[in-house]
Image (cartoon, rainbow, N blue to C red; front, side):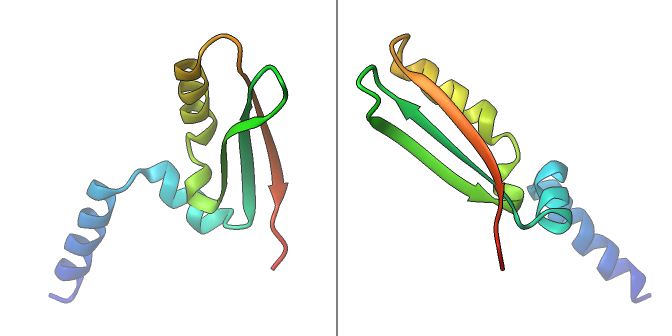
Length: 84
């Protein structure tokens, strides 16, 4: 009977979070990505720096953000490993 509450808990977590997010958070918590959007003068107008599960779909979201800025903006994303 102890298995049933645990199973309900796992189902609740999986229904509220993405599996990709959970996988990255557990397996690769130190893998990070930094995305920046530059204008024509090479000034950073938007930046996001995340690690672990937050990296999931980050580049896709950054591309959507760059699209909203317009054609004169450039997106650059770099991956790196965070030291503990």
